[in-house]
Every structure is written in structure tokens, then in C-alpha cells.
Image (cartoon, rainbow, N blue to C red; front, top):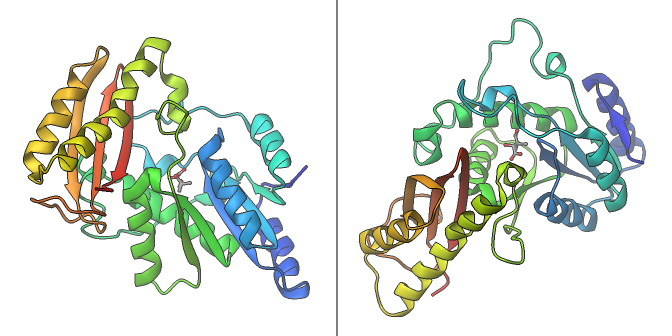
Length: 283
Ligand code: PAF
């Protein structure tokens, strides 16, 4: 079993001795738990690149809006610990709220611009919550490398920018999105979907194939591609709303004409579940 820590002080003491006395390198995988194959890929990569792998499991309240799914977000520490054991994780950090947000907590991290577009428009305050908790976790663990999935592409960009701007001594390692065999991107929120909704949720992945097909036939106008994708997604039962379909360059600047390496990002409601996904244009 991995060692389980609940308190910042205890984890710091343990990691200090691994880092300073033994000279071990530390890889860090921050998560909100209910681990899936996407997390597995992050953990496996950390295991290859570091002597010690630390996983945090913390459902961070500050990144959820008031009407979002904080209360029903899936939680199962026992199951997560068993999975971490199978994967050879060395340390799990699962703090209670009062450890992460002590009384009188006043400080937030805001990555301007990037936090306010796409997801940020629909989830005001979300990336402030993410950047703040990730900075705190990085300060606690002080890893050599930290691993983030491209599934949350905008989150990855926000964190890369924060690390660059605040001169944090950590390497951010992006890991490609892991998909189920039928194309659905792995996500802890997939458990909310009924069988029928899951079938309609495949329209997100398949809309990327629609886009690739249009592009391979010579279409380059982002507006046309986005419109076709949206129509395709909305033609599926249980899809209640498309929040956005956007095409950007790798740094999330909107594009009018599509090129290789651009990103297509979308957020879609299937039943009462909001799903996000993104795709790198391959041409
Ligand atoms: O991607 C997640 O699971 C969360 O946003 C993160 C990075 C663990 C911060 O709470």
C-alpha cells in the first residue's frame, strides 16, 4: 500500500527526507480522485521519470461554482488507494479541507486572460480555484515534475503559464488524453451518464472525426467546421446544449483558418452532465 498522509506537515517531513537524505527525484500527480485510466497514464509516466511518485486526492471546493457538482462529485478513497497500490504509487496525500484552506485564508492565484475564455466564461472563478490549489499542492510536495492530462487542455495552459510567470521550480509534463476504446475521453464525470447518455456522449469524439474529414477535403474555414460539428452533436438524443465549440492555436488564441496543430475545444451538456473534450488537428 502507498503511504497515506492527511496532514501537510507530515507529508513535508516525509518528502524532505526522501529528497534531501536520499536524493530522490519526486514526480507528482494531482487529482480529485475517483481515478481512471487517464490518471493511470499520468502515474505510469511519473513512475518512469522519477524515483518517487506522489498522488494527491482532493476534491477542491474553490474550483466548483455554486450550482456545480461539488457535492455529488464521486469519491472513493479505498478504491483509489487500491488502484494506487496496483500502479506502485509511493505516497498518497488526501488532506481534509482545513489543511488546504486554513481559517482566514485570503490569497488567490489568478492567471489573467487565459482564465476568462472558453471554460472560464461558463465557469467564472473555476481557474482561480484550480491555479490556487495547484500552487498550494506544488508548494507542499515540491516535486521535480508534475503531470497533467491534455483532456483538460485549458487547465494545462493555465498551469504552465502560472509556473512560468511565478518562476516555480517544477517541470510540467503534459500527457495525451486517454480514450475508451470507442473514443469517449476518460473522465471521473463519465459515471454520471446513463447507458443511453453515454452513447450520445460519443458524439463529442465523433465530431472531431467530422472536423478531420472536412479538413482533409480542403475545408479550412473555422466557422464552417464549428457549425458542422455543432449540428452533428446536437442531432444526438440527450444532448441538451453545446456551450461552445472553438478552434484555437496551441496557445488558445482563436483561429479563422485551421492549420495542423490547432486545437478544437468543446463543452457539451449530455442530460445533466457537462462534458469537455479537445482535439489536436492532425491534417
Ligand atoms: O484536474 C483535476 O483533477 C483538478 O483540476 C486538479 C488539477 C487536481 C486541481 O484540483
